[in-house]
Length: 348
Ligand code: PMV
Image 1 (cartoon, protein in one colour):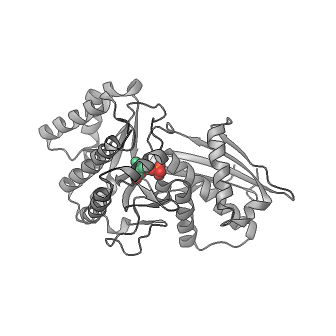
Image 2 (cartoon, protein in one colour):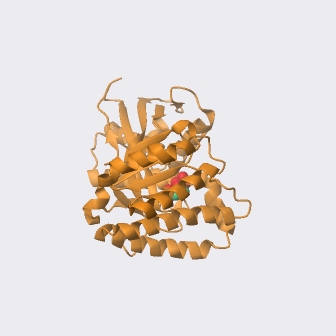
Image 3 (cartoon, protein in one colour):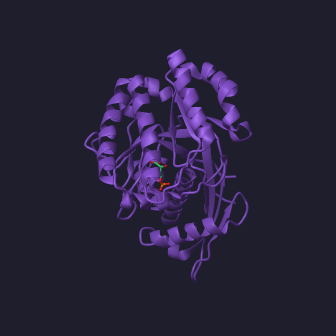
């Protein structure tokens, strides 16, 4: 493989603090969301391109194997963005992705996958055209293109804390792409860790697109979009001030609201498992005994994200190992933390 016609990108998952749940138009959010990008839960995508004269034929492998469902999604995404990246009409793409964490189980694997693939596509465009893009524009385009594949992927392009969706709380914010807000975040939050407790690694019963669809007939939708906008404003202020008490309150309210909305949707499934609820109870007990800043959030799945500052890492590890792993599948957890975003890997 040469560096002339190939590229490798690693992109991390992100965890939403204010949730995106409900969309409109072409993958535009109904409300702004705020997230923290992780460090260790990553997708790595390798892409090679070859010029062709006839219609291109692409290939896609996941973990080294054909995956027909993912392949269909990737190929239809490439068709969708041909009008934005016209070079795609003249090149065969060989794409190969792998995750170091369970996919499709509610740990935002679509976010890390889409952003790693889009960064490959944009790097290829740059190399083929011979015109290096301005870095700000390159990453903003990556966020926009990633959004077209998976909304939350817009936020995985950048490290630290990010806002996606237009909000009066952040100048320059947009429904089209995410923007980074690290320069307005208190140092305490930049030390935050995320212990992902794998209650179940099975494929989730509600795909994100079906879940967003449920919001179209959810009787609480309008109220939710309003409260998500307000929570975004509040959280931006909290992240700036360093108020951990308020952070815990709003983060857990968002997680429980997401699951409440899913359950209140017509035909909406229960995504929490008994282990999820036991863990939430244990966290609340632990907090009331210790005064810890530990809090939890959830994606649209049963797995729990424990968020806490670095200075509590020792005690929290003991708590996880002593009291929480019994609720996890094969005692499985990922010791993750805030990360600094996507990276291009040197050629192999
Ligand atoms: O990006 P999608 O379509 O997979 O939706 C993500 C939805 C949540 O993970 C539940 C919330 C979020 O903001 O990431």
